[in-house]
Image 1: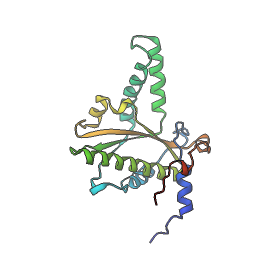
Image 2: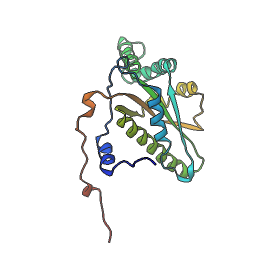
Image 3: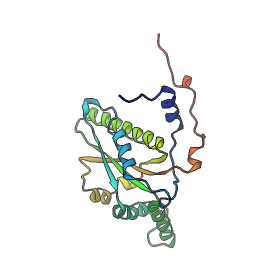
Image 4: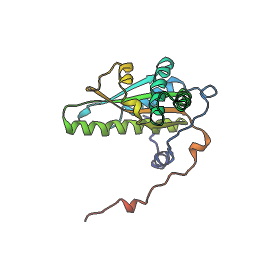
Length: 201
């Protein structure tokens, strides 16, 4: 039997976790696949009503990452410039470089239920799974950004993953890398518990 984590340690882990947008260089700090699997193991133990286990995960390899970089960059550039302009090309090139610099990418999908109540419960379960992933990652010195950008809605992404939008909805792109020091600063704020809490007698 393993020793349970102390309540203080768990609370500290939850409070310390941050969203990371910049990562240590992947060439200097490569991420071993075993660490990703540890995070995914934590993710799949999230609570889920009636054990629907609605989460699906895709670990993106180098070729797939290069293909997705084009989709990512095109969506970002088109938000600010017409495709025929020099500005578009500049924005596109920067976005490709930014995406390729992300050390690891995992896409998260939700298997879709025809029942509206189950659909809502399953999204909550997938969110819990992503939180589990992020907490495990943080304990391993990995930073994570949960992105919900347009790459998830693009049909080319669905085709790349060989999935159909009526059966699976992509709900997150997890961008992962070793934490840089500025990601560990305690700048996150929360309002007091009293501001959210109502106690009924």
